[in-house]
Image (cartoon, rainbow, N blue to C red; front, side, top):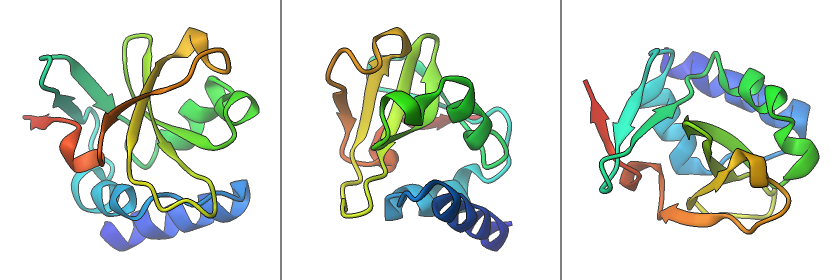
Length: 124
C-alpha cells in the first residue's frame, strides 16, 4: 500500500502543480493509507478526521480549497474546522494549520502543530 499511496500523491502533485511536505507524505503512506475513518485526538481533546488517500482530492475539490487558498491543501477536518498543509513548490514547511472553512480567504490560518506527527494521537 505504501508505494501506491506515494505514487498517487506524486500524480496529484503533478496534476495540481503543488508539493506536499515530506512528513505528510510519509504519514499518509505509512499510517493513514486508505483507512477510513482515521481519527486523531489533540491536546484539547478534539477529534480530527484525517482524510485518506482516496478522499483527499475530492475533499479539496468539494470545498474549492485551491481556488481560495492555492498554497494550502486540506488534509482533515473537525466539524467546520479544516486542517491544512502548505503545498507551495518552494516551501519545506511541515507545519499543520487550521481555519474555519467558512473563513477561507478572509482570515489567516492558525498554526496547530510543527508537523502531522505532532497534531494528535491516533484513536483506535
